[in-house]
Length: 377
Image (cartoon, rainbow, N blue to C red; front, side, top):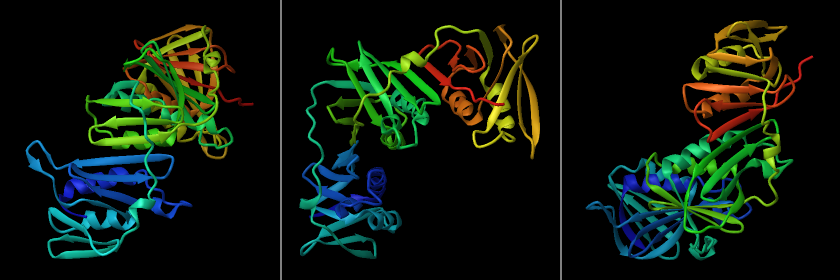
């Protein structure tokens, strides 16, 4: 194998596939990146057996020559060293060649590295996925769907299914739901799909986080293919595979109250900033903050940690309807929820001091956040 490649494109591709490379693994070859030179271009692959990422660098793009293939072939190189080497090479182009056995020579300008490669035949094959039923989503919408839900997944392995985001597709609508059983984030979006089929899968939160980091903010469509135990996201020059979590996601629709006793409409930014300030003195590990409605149209945000001090702040609401209310909740959960919502004003619907409450953007039904209050005695 021998090829010359533009260094910037190589660095970008290496960093993309590094997101899947296992740092600790029982399969030593997965600490490497597989590099394949074909007649079409160069393919880099990284995998930790849960996530696999393949990045393709074509021979040329928009008239620029990116790669010159001298000899096709493959090699696996230690990801950690290869990544650091390519970032620090002196010139704009790099020559990579594999000589006797798996000895790999990386040259750029006057710098020359010799790396011991590994046998590419031992590298696991990526899942073969039949691309029949393709779902299409614009990249920026996909990133928004991830950002607005993934923070609410559970970090505890006691219920592994809750460490993922539930994607349900029915009648051309995708519903993404995440919950750690103390809060819930849900976002709906229309999707383009070839089939009338419905899907109900759970994607690991970690996979979605990594996918979001790699995708650019564009409106180019991402093709999504779902199989029994894998999901594939196809963007330009990029394949991202993730395994799906096994098991049934709990029915969260029962958690969402359909009536309310107190409704508050308030400016998102002002409310968020007051919560941030109150959280500075929030109580205990849950960082508890208290909210009280006060006449005529004010919300009082307070927190009190006896050994440190207390903070009280009033925020003007657009409107408050229904019963008076005092409720306590985890400040971090509230801040996460408010940052995920879009729009200048939000509506918070309470059904009592000990019942879950809903937060929505005022004029947008595609998204909701739900938080369970904290008991304080």
